Length: 145
Image (tube, rainbow, N blue to C red; front, side):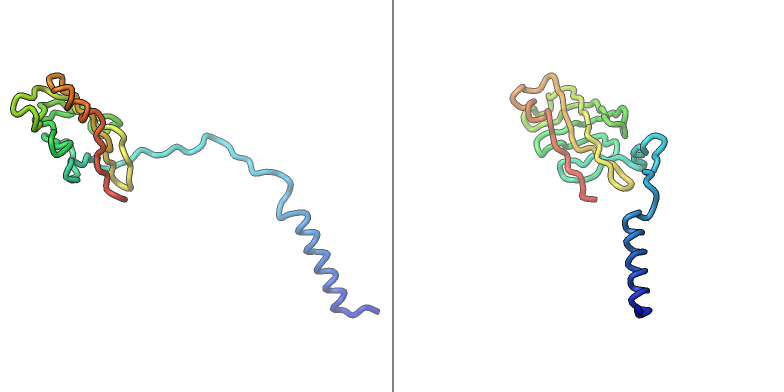
């Protein structure tokens, strides 16, 4: 005659094996319906950090480097993927005769409640071609989140 504990142990082992083999549910896979969620657009202010790391919003003057910037700026599409500003180039190599300039801010970096432009391009038709190359792709500082 078997002992009761041996019978209980055998029954428990058989039950655990049966549940393990069957799994915790049926053979059906979960059904996913509808479109995948999309990333929500960032809300809040949008900034561009100048060469000194100061966050600016729609600045009237923007120092893109220690040698060049754009002054008397008027902006279009601020807060969009590409903001465009028109003004006058101000640079150490051309004095007060630098001429008109356009600055494009791109590559928005979204953080919790704010966004920053991370790239600037300055085009100045009257600028010396040697220096104009330095203005084509300027990395803008973005604070750590």
